[in-house]
Amino acid sequence: MTAAVVEPVDDELWSAIGDPTRRRMLDLLLLDGVGTATSLGQQLPVTRQAVAKHLTVLERAGLVHASPAGRERRYRVDEAQLARAVASLASVGSAWDARLQRIKRIAETIQRQQNHED
Image (cartoon, rainbow, N blue to C red; front, side, top):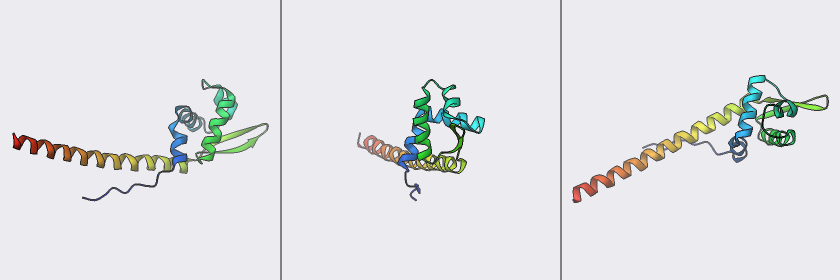
């Protein structure tokens, strides 16, 4: 049996994409191509200040990059970092699938042994 190769977990990245508001923000940015805290705040049920804080988390995780635009900053999704996040999620999912299969085989073996003892 071969062990699944699991990428190291990037807690900051997982924390950033773990929040539903931040995932919605990423969706909006991907859809529109670019957005500001104000434009995102108009589409979300949170304050502009909360949007700005969420954008800071996404930026710190490398999922978005900002560029100055007058008094605001325009945010774009870093598609390479997003692809890395998707690959990381897939890797963890595969590892858990393998673990669950091993647990199932162990449980089936125990069940067979108990049936033979009866």
